[in-house]
Image (cartoon, rainbow, N blue to C red; front, side):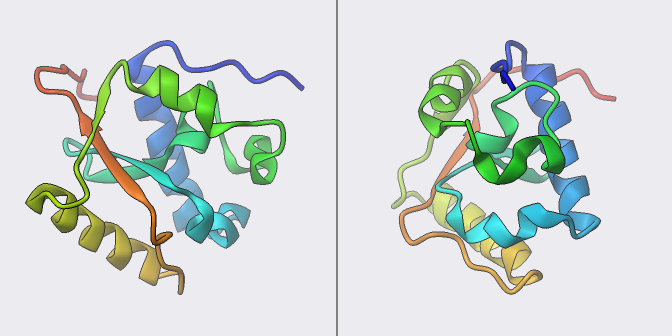
Length: 129
């Protein structure tokens, strides 16, 4: 099965919403929460999503299939069009990492010790749905 990379920020937003819906429905992706290294945050929706999940078009837990045939390297390249990586020492990064830890704790998971947070670049406009 071929997986196409996202080409618009709207596709990323849909995937982040789907990822969080999948979590709320306690789908299989929960078992992998501690494996994700690159987390993307959209403040407008107050939602996080991992690059390997949100970087491919029309993603959901069953299509994600535990990350088989997917690579974070490809998604990272695409997602940096809209996002910027925070320095792990920055106050913003520490605050968001605490929020991510609280979310993952609901599922008895922790972020990887080398996890990174990415946020939307300044001036990126989202269409509010």
